Length: 337
Image 1: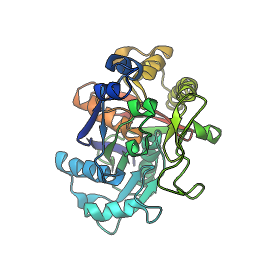
Image 2: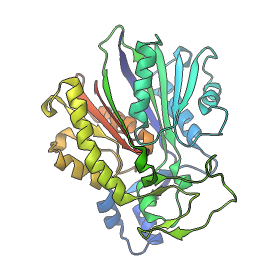
Image 3: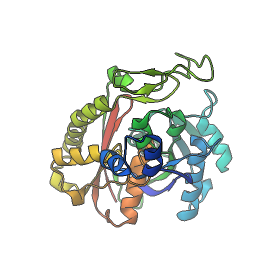
Image 4: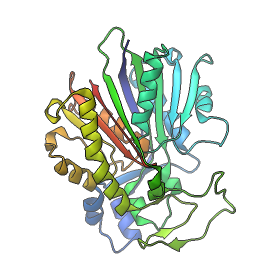
């Protein structure tokens, strides 16, 4: 028994923040400079009151409609996000009810960011191969823009909100297409990407914290998401090539065996540097960040859906997925389409 990715759909909120909007706010920047530094021209922002679970539900409804999937066939639900509805109960339980799924299914949250899709995909595969589930609904979503400081231009230029829905199924009647997994974790780098306040270690003490300027000359507030861009770049340059190498070795593949590489869509400029560093031909390296930004755990399923839609990924192709980021954490696998 094996597992395969059967279908993917994604949802982007209506509101858009363009580079022109950012350049009006930060006059030292031009729209072209923002695009050069990030590879992004616009990113989507969730509406007031619209949170991660709402984006996940919207993506799931699109999945059911676009791929003619009967929601009553879902056996297990995984919700991967770091912006959950409440500290308790589990947001996946709330989503089960909102989507009208059977009550005889399992539902869990996975609290991960950038590497969350690949980690969650391994759990979905395990549910099918080890537990005997037939259809696992994997939802990734984030509304990170609600946590960004309005004067932190580095994060505002990168991040967007989104939700993605992936159906992972039992491949009993078809070739399994999800391979083996490689994982990594280094909690010593947790402060490179962190939102310090708002949970049990550091609860919110009042509506808004105290602004300060950090050592990188960024406007910060411990109630907001913060990112050390230089540290993250260095981490990515160090981790991604080793992750790809380990993933290839685990599958007994070489670079030439892979038809397409899809990395976490963190930053267009950084992705191009990584591609050149690993000497991956442009035609074998797919990016989809220009019109949606870095959508955290949803970047890989969105890029994968677009690669299939655009014909960049074809039947029988081997695609290496590599995710890395907040945690610090990383994960890789190879799928066949």
